[in-house]
Structures are given as C-alpha cells and as structure tokens.
Length: 356
Image 1: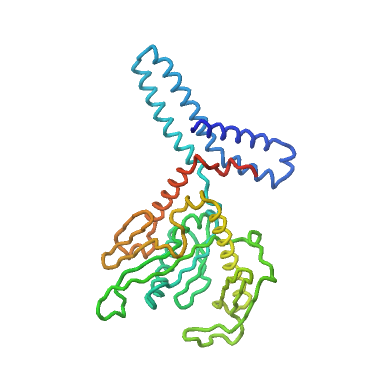
Image 2 (image 1 turned 90 degrees about the vertical axis):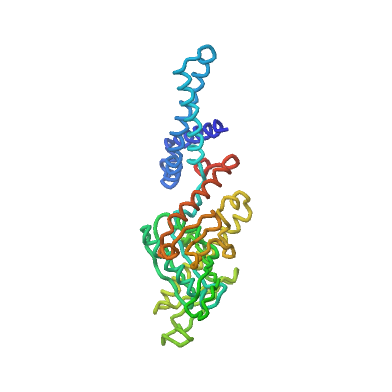
C-alpha cells in the first residue's frame, strides 16, 4: 500500500530534520553533510507524500458526503481526486527508485574484436568511434588510454557518465559485406564492449605486494619496436590474475598510471558483480546482464537497421547510429530499467530511507 510508503517517507524525513538540528551532528561536518544529502534526497518524495495526503483527504470527504447526497459537482471532485491519487502513487514510487550507486561515475570503456577475425577488429573500431562521438554529443569528455590491434580502451568523463553508457556493455554483432569480400557474401562478426565505473583510489585499495610490474619496450604493428626505452608497462594483480598492459605513452610513469586506473576499474567491476550475484533483487533490476557474452545489439547493414534485443527496439540508418546517434536506445533502456525497478519497489527500500 502506498499509505505505508508515505508513512515511511514522513517518518524518515522528520528523523533526518531532527538530526540536522542536533548539535552533535552539526559539530561533525562529515556527518552533517551526509545527513543533509539524505534530507535533500528525500525532499521531493516528501512533497509528493504531502500532496497525496491532501488528495486522499479530499477524496475521503467527498465519499462521505456522497453517501447521502449525489451532488454532481462532488462526484466530479471525487473522480479528479481519485485520478490524482493514482498519479501520485506512481510519482512517489518513482521518486523512491533506488539509483545505481555508480551512476554518477566516470567510466572506462573497452571495445575488443570478438568472432570474425580482422572484420571483428574493424567493428571494434567502429564501436569505439560510435561511443566517443556519442559522448561528445552528450557533453562528456573522452580520453584515449590504449589502442592496439582491434583493442580500444578509453575513458569517458562527466557527471552521470556511467548511467548513460552502462547499457552499452555486452556483445555487439554486425552483419555486412567486408571490403575484402570479393564474392559479396555477408559476414557476421562480433565485438565486445565492457563499461567499467572508474574507481577512486580510496574505493579500491591495491597493495603493492599484490602487484607484479613488468616493463618492456613498446611495439608497433608487426611487433617492431617503436621506443628505445623500456616505457611499456604490464601490471599483473596476483590475487585475481588480472593483467593490464599500457604502451601508448612515451613515459613509463604515465603508462603505469593509466594501467592502474584500468586495473582499479576492473577490480571494482568484480566487486560489483560479486555483490549482484548475492542479491537476487539487484540481478532482476538490470536491463540485460551487461556481461560481455550477452548479445545485446545487431547492426544489419544489408537491411540498414539496428536492433537492440533487450528492449526489442529497431531503428533504421545504421550509419547514423554508428555516428553516435544513440539517444533512442539509451532512453528506451533507461525507461526499461526504471520500469523494472518500480516493479520491485514493494520489496525494496529507497536509498534515502536507509540509515547510514
């Protein structure tokens, strides 16, 4: 019942207001800021809850009078109040939807050729350009971290980057005639995309003793050396076996810094996956799994259409999509994620309801 949720919102809002007036909380700057963020995060839901109270009171009063008096004006008022109550119920649930804790983070994106040989590597490059163009269209900044033989690693920076790009994670499939195909046959190739929330150093602690760091000379196409110093870096995280290599910068220190950024992001991803595996509610709230093995989208050149299999959305003009026009897909995926989270609301507490 929405009335129970309204009571919870009112109770928590009053509790937070009381804490903000507590001298002990005021004296603790970090604690006060935390309580303030929770209070402001609940403010909109509290306003909706108060409006729901007023609409419920109006409807109850109209029903009581209509028992003995079939006044048409009162009947219209009751109908309007009941309609607004239904709208408010959904708005309150929407206001309490638990956001992804990583939504505001920058991201590190990796695109890699999958099945299909050279064509798969070319498609990975297409996806790299598609995502960087989309990032620029949305006002984000991009930073190239590593490009080598069909593998692209880059960062997308800006508030909400993860919320926009997280649904791009998975296997993308392309159907087209390669330029090298003399018989005009259509080939199917795949490329994987990993979207990793970028971790801060304080979020993922990496002990130096857990790292094996190797340095070597960077190489270009065909393995030829392009640097006379040992500037390339390969970092192995011994507890997990994760390996990250960087060689794009001329400085060993810069390559190491970039490699550590990617390593922390991958470790954070592992923590996120482990938590989701333990929480059935979290698993259900994803639009698709986001795993690299999941085929999420097909780019069909012969039929000039792109289909996202998770939301059953098909758009024409493959070239425009690959040029970074992804808003229709992003909006549909965000709406589906929100719909699923709304369905889960009866068994979940919103983030602002949780006690620190």
